[in-house]
Image (cartoon, rainbow, N blue to C red; front, side):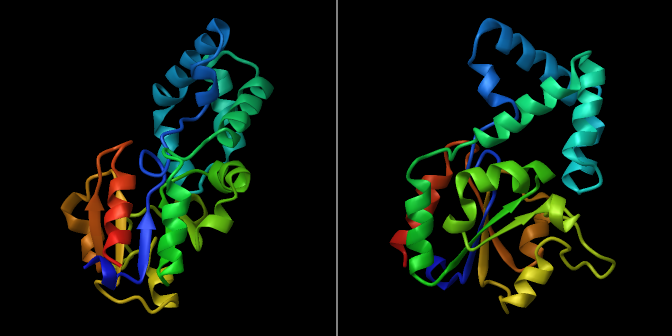
Length: 214
């Protein structure tokens, strides 16, 4: 039951935010839009195999931007500058989100970002948006060097396990709100309730349900 959750984990991409890397270029001048398409084609095409190592902390933003610059035949400095600008330009999907998060926190629940993300999130996005002041904590795969579904040899969560233990949150005491599919019930197997929401639009109604049940 919503009122019983001691901790609410919330995904970032397509849940808290719909912003994209280099997203500020997507709606810009014709030249900026061409640059956006060229960079995206390189990163998500032939360089797509860099994404998971990047999210697991095995590669830095600089490593990946050098590869993107080579793959797209662009200047590395340009690619990196625009990448950082895009990270700093990221926004919440809905302006109501911060107030809903703070309402949950005021009730005594912990509200934590849980994101499979790159080092760029902690370096540029979180500071620019002041996320540390809105949420209790941020769990990011690049810093934890594990993604949300990863387990150790005993089947324990490499992403959530330490945090759940630190705050003595047992099975049923937390929920993850995410747009992704919980394949094979992996998250539920960690004792975390799972609420899948519609990508891009489902978070605010879900948060309002939880707040209303307090």
